[in-house]
Length: 220
Figure 1 (cartoon, rainbow, N blue to C red):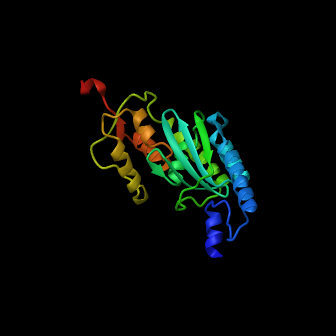
Figure 2: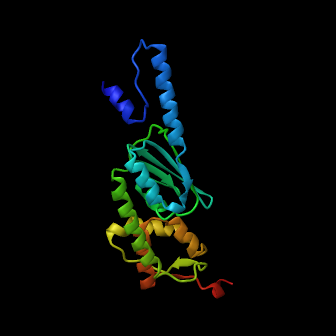
Figure 3: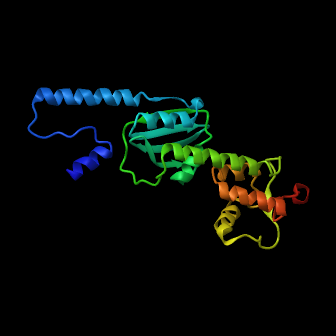
């Protein structure tokens, strides 16, 4: 009984016990095919916003895979009974991947009722995840507003080690991995998409002069 319940929770459409009458088997198969056809038809323009797509899947308790395409990028969000359980996007997975795509508002989406064997890495509800995603987006936007307006300028670290709290050490290393003195700020921000803590630290280091724009005239 436990195996049956687990299988149904993972997206198995039905459970049959032998022997089964041919007419009943045919009726069950047709019912499943109709359901799959209906679910597979869920898709459309991402212009309606990711939040609306997620809420539809939550309200209808869908189990399956949501594929998103936007500006040449792809993302996948996995659902079980209407709850996101994992996501993959922008080189990230789990909640960081979901945060990275929260502001996608163009492109297409397509939902498939097929859910691969996927470990749960997201434990928040759909609503909780969306609220946290948009809170982070607001804070990131405020921090980005403090950075140089010219997004084509490159950044580099000043001489010496920036003073940061122990809790920010990992975020500092993340910044060192993407700031190399030649990469445009626009590309740096693209790599940090959805990453609140490194962006907040970057804004602070720019204010303090620990990270500064590269002097292009000296470079030449």
